Length: 584
Image (tube, rainbow, N blue to C red; front, top):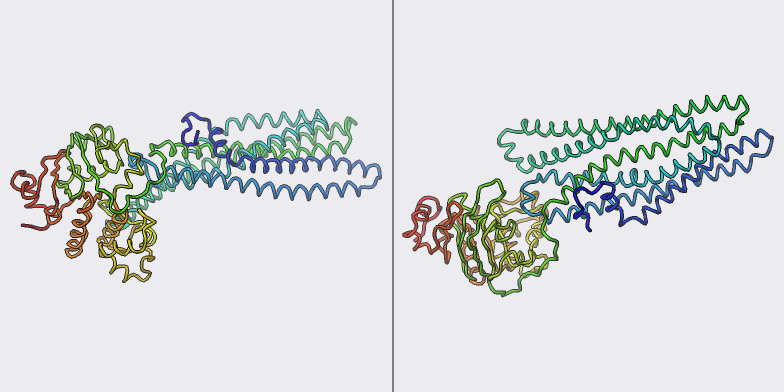
């Protein structure tokens, strides 16, 4: 079972083990080194006891000093090696979690993305996964090695003097009761702190994604307040978690100081009565000092585990969002592949259960090859047609077929490999122009790239750019004009050699010259490919082989421009008032 398939009620410790399991050997090696380090430390009080006895009886202390020196050096060397192995393993756990989460987020269904804040998802893959580093070393290994070292130390103390051990355990038990009250509060505060980080990330992403609009609206101060409030809440919850963590750590430290004072008092009295000798008392006090480290390690492990539990919970929440099945990429259509035929049959669809229907029984058929235009008022459901074809969403009822086969029966990679899609806002990714053009077909050769550049009239742009195709286009293509971004998106789609080309207002930002050139290109592509166009320009619509008129989520009429101008009043009105150019 993969981590993403775990049950929502799975305990946090089992989730942590699922992340750690691939690295169990190196984790075990680091734990063994830590235990050996602890064992060398445990030997020091016993050697010190022998050293004091040798001094008391005027015996040579050279051997004891050499033994103590060797133990100190071995302790430092093994401690450093163990720490490195554990830190390296922890980084590997974080890497594995980030790979798994990033791969899963890329497969999220669009419905899940619509309901999520991108900034919060980013926080889960950055901030939350980072916490796995500490929870792996401090919590998992710390609890194991610290716990074993603690038990071993207590056993050694019992062998030295059972009475003093009883005094020590009484003090530690009292501290344990206090920690039992504090620890749950750390978990709650940590979860709220991580949630606040997600809210802050979402606020920042929201602002940076529309920074021009924010500035143009003079809304910097209002948005600044929103961002600062989110940062303040994150700070407040983090400080709250830190407060309880500090309380836990200092409770453990205070308990050990009280134990030391108590042991010193009781032990001094026992030395005075002759029940124990000075060497035994010194050895026991050294054990008390040494006991501080594993106790603080265990307390730190428990507090860190609470923080890690909050992070693990948020990561698992992201891994349970609806996602598309993982599948290998499908090959693109070969040159000259036959065009695709498409049909909608009584399709009903809404974006959410509490939203109104966008499509109310949409029915139409598009034969293989040729150009079909979709027209209608804003909100008629034209763009939703394309989203359903790409299976970004599935219809609530009705059937959509491609080549006579229900879209639900297609493997998603195979379906999308047959389609080229140019979105309404023609997004361009940060990176080089070449990276953007080859996004859908990285194997395209230079000849194919050159042909598409010429077809979309991007060859002139490439010639003007200082780095040619390797010029960086900026975040979301800010170094390109709106028309250039649209041409890049069209070129990217054409490089995929699609059997079905979807163009959603793909020429809306082009000037008249470039629009005419692209219109001729689309007409040429339509001779060998099935082309669907959402258009608001009459010059584009009139060249279509068929026009589908949509209104309020229904298909009103299907026909040519000449037929619809006389047969459909809505189309006639659109042609007279909304399209930008006239024809005929």
